[in-house]
Length: 190
Image 1 (cartoon, rainbow, N blue to C red):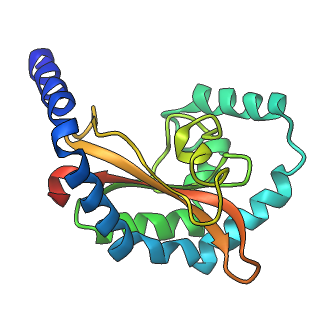
Image 2 (tube, helix red, strand yellow; image 1 turned 135 degrees about the vertical axis):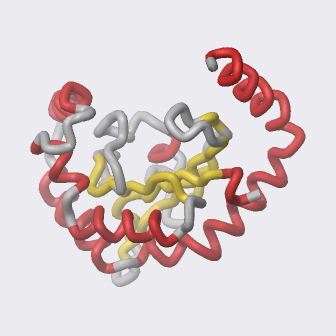
């Protein structure tokens, strides 16, 4: 099994440059046709803005503390820090979108202005996304920023996937408030 996983990873890595443009075009189309409308959903906007109010004064030490707490409880969905992200109306909305995608979407989560998880269809491996390109290349860039992650082999599903992330804007004010990341199953897309 380990050899199969290694072989798939090598196959993805060696074919990625050849199909990078095709993959990104497919992801862009999927984003435009299926995901972009989510970014203005009132449930997501309200959840991000509420958390932005709570976390506005957090310094890096507090963010690191919360991230370590999350990592310590990862795998325990009933832990308060994780349950507060996956058991909300915004998380329910994201799960509904994942379910409606018919396996094209593997995960979805939103982040606040600090890069902290607000809601997720399933727990992420860490709580703070602020040190990753999915946040740094979207929210920190501006209102129209989109970031396409690299193609990876998902360990749990054994599927090729990539993440697409975008800035979330409050349409009433035109101000960026957070970011959305969606994992796309490339086998279902291509």
